[in-house]
Length: 393
Image (cartoon, rainbow, N blue to C red; front, side, top):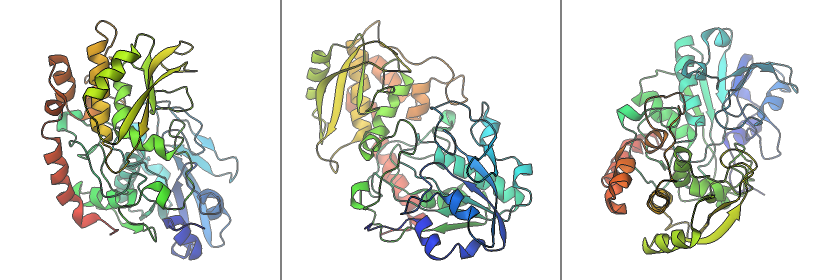
């Protein structure tokens, strides 16, 4: 029996009374299920007095089939028969709902599980949809869900103005410690959306709880986020997308393991041991990705074991890892150079970091503390900034 009720579970108990007599659009993916694993789209389609008029699919699509950075096309949902509009196409403009899609709707509902890291695109899909809904004068509802990394810990710098992208659209730290509903409240005020916003909070969730404390089943919110352990390391290991190091895509444990054919694992483990990183241990690993970087090639690297999730600092750990790989792989390690998340003129690593400080510092040979200088102060400032929008103790 679950200890926590999601916003969807709360609405199921209420019989979707807030939507009675309305034409509804819903932004959904595979995580949009209640405690009995019933999908929101199916529930809305089967509720008397509610007209499910459209579905909207974020990155990876409403049923979660598409890989990262793969455009999702228009379709018709095979279960409900309603049209599916893509909110992840090949241009930045394609990330927002078109005004004609919102015409005739009386409500737009967002119900997707976030993972607590600013790179994850779903909260920006939510924000852009809120902005479009405000323009169309369509009320917007967020069915809230817990932050798997807890809502107390924060880590990292805020995204700088010159580094905004779909993996960092607003000034959030890497690990923000907020739920989607709380972020919606913050965006609506601080970005001036003027959205008619209603958040349906979870019941029974406390800020200090990790996912395993909730009693809720973890449903993979994207193809490379299979477990809560993946989410825990993600605020640091997603930085690998900005390098030529495999972040474990194409394996069963993405982001928890990393490597490349040229990595000297013994030297890597010795280097990381010197950093005295809290709450984490590393072991040598080999893997052969089935797709993405080094597809079909044997890679050497390490596996990340979080030994104390309260002490663990995922961003510091990730920065230390890619600094070590850079220093140990001269002529082999490289930064990703192609366009990333609709931005062509800024290195992907800098977009992910929200600054060029880390990359420039690694290239200049700075120590780890200097690479992250000022980050804690920015996170502390964000803690004060977010306070009015929090929903849970």
